[in-house]
Image 1 (cartoon, one colour):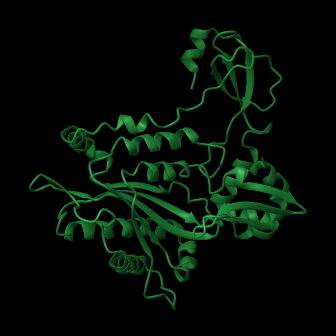
Image 2 (cartoon, helix red, strand yellow; image 1 turned 45 degrees about the vertical axis):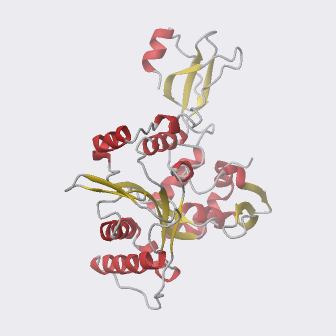
Image 3 (cartoon, helix red, strand yellow; image 1 turned 120 degrees about the horizontal axis):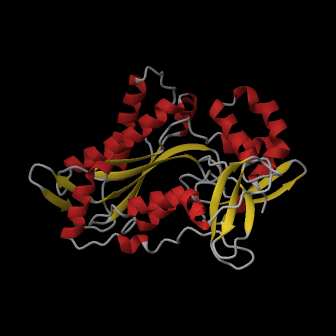
Length: 369
């Protein structure tokens, strides 16, 4: 497996020479963080076996949300939080895509327009839910922003996972969509309303719309059953960058080759690029500092925990059975006796030559992460 950190070490100078002047501060910070992730240049942590006392020093991960090495635990926690909110009703995955002619403007105004893109997506399904003859109430949705295509090109779009259900706060009624199992809303009508809302939001930001915008936009709406697989899919790529290192298959003669699965044919395809260009593709998807790419709206907002608990109790839903299907976080194992190892000290300097301090198991448990 080819590590992203090794590619950065190899092609960083070329990347900075070609793209450094136009790189955003957030991209340069990500480059520096991922370059040192879990290498000898990163701070280390001391781990100790619970049984035999064997001690080892392990490099820290960088913790950057664009790094494919990091935040596996955070991804798992996000998935568990979303699965714990499951409510009765079929779930749908609604995808709102920005047309190609508008993408340069979005790229130039990322923080403002990413936010408006998520808001316009939510307001669209909220409007349809209120006006639907069967639902007539408040919607709930989990929104996740993606900025990349499978080829790693800039392709901003928003995924909304939402139940085909609504709550009427005035009449205190829970309504679900009946009839065709695979139908929620008309995707062409969704696209028209989404287009109007996003263009109005862009104009309200004081930005000039580009010429040549298409009249027809793309919104996809498909049934995803109980929603577990869709949430797990979105969660696993939420904090871990846009490419897995196992998909980087070659680095030869200054060229990097990676694989991806074509959306239409579902076959593996390969793309080869100069190393600096490959880094530019990866780094263009680093989000602005502090930007939240996932939102919970409507009755799936964090403030609605009591309502969700009541619905689950009334309909006999047990969200723990979905969470139990997830793989637990792997534990560090002792190479000597296979027992679990505890983290007893963190933030140690790289390649520290000082002998480790002897800690009792009681002290280790107190400071363990």
